[in-house]
Image (cartoon, rainbow, N blue to C red; front, side):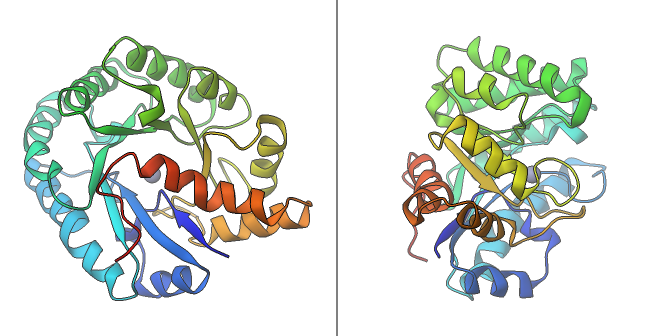
Length: 268
Ligand SMILES: [Zn+2]
């Protein structure tokens, strides 16, 4: 099996996870900027985090021949403080030209607050003005449908944003169609407890098809499984999907989306 892990928070993971992923057939890993397991108090914390994402992690992954890429932003969970968000947005441009940075992400909403929406709009402006691709985080549980609608409205209101260059992640049964019908890519996050289980993800594929959709493990500080993508590929196999269909979802689709950024290359 070959697959791409398009959304994994490797800074929260041990090196053995890189070994397991490459053993399972992982060809590349992409890491959106997100919460670091604690709220950072100053812009300097983000500066160091962006250095970690663009320098240290690519080197750690390269030891196992695994290309590592990243997306940069201040995540919605920490963007309630508008002054801090402004300060972080101001340092992002100096990192955007680094060779493994794919775009702006994971931006979006967490609690759908006014300040989160403001910071989301600032990120969309930054992405549009710098012609960057976008990776979006959608809220959890009861806030998800409303948050997904707000995010799509914000993206659609900027005519410079091309939907095919945006992936909206953490879709579930009640939001996936909204995202795909608006022309965006959709990501399914495979969690053992919340978000999509492997069985639910395969159900969604059965209903929605396999165009403009990918799966990821997120593998962050919560209960999560770094090998969730290959495990779900096995669930697809068990349910009778062909090797070609499985390869499309776990390898070809992320390759197609990510290759819109010329910096995305599979050779380490
Ligand atoms: Zn994430």
